[in-house]
Image 1: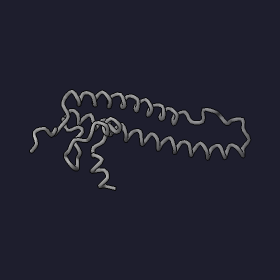
Image 2: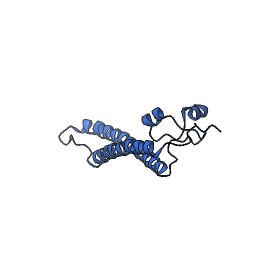
Image 3: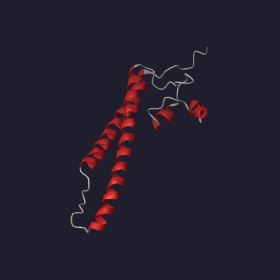
Image 4: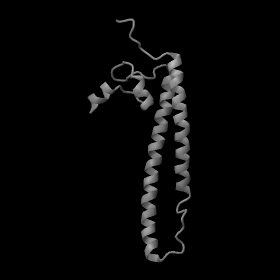
Length: 127
């Protein structure tokens, strides 16, 4: 086995990723809070003074918008969960190791997708 091949990222490198993930978590939670806020305050524009015909169209549009916001919120929650799981992997010092190949995931990929658990090699094999 080649002694020059790294099997994990150094503590300093893990701290760099932790900082990146913590920033993403903060902004993701803020975005989720904004989505939740818009769901709890529907119809901020108000349609109380519009004719009945338009009210029906408005209700359909509001329902569609609410479903769309719910989907965005669900996606955001999943992203937050994935980022939190990445922080656990950093604490365990297993962050950045491909769960299929056992090789280190390149830093460039982790900077772009900080919650990645697969190298591009493993990801492409799944497709």
